[in-house]
Length: 135
Image 1 (cartoon, rainbow, N blue to C red):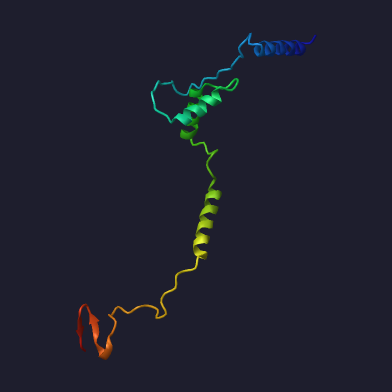
Image 2: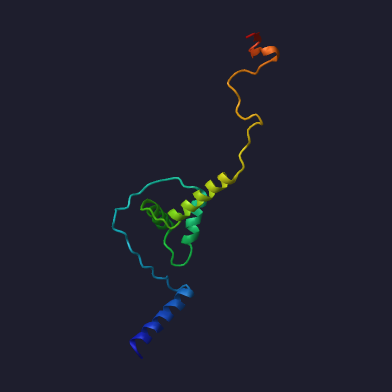
């Protein structure tokens, strides 16, 4: 039997033992040595914690705290996976401007601009406040 066949057979035996609950799956842990971990106590929204705990319950998933840390690191380092690119933003702005420009403007009255003078009354009088002044 070749070395590959022996390793494959051993791997299948281990998988069967894991399925029967006789053995725990091996988990490869890679530690990020960029910074030392610091213990903190924070309050998070319940739905956020439940989301990460649900993901952590999957087979061979990282612990939920590790997943939260990874999400925070991606946000701090500027991961743009969930953010629209500049072309998408420019297109959205162009669409908004075009929509605003295509709206019909409210028309002014039939007389056009109004004079800054008060409206005239009969016989050449100008209506100023409560008094009528003759010219």
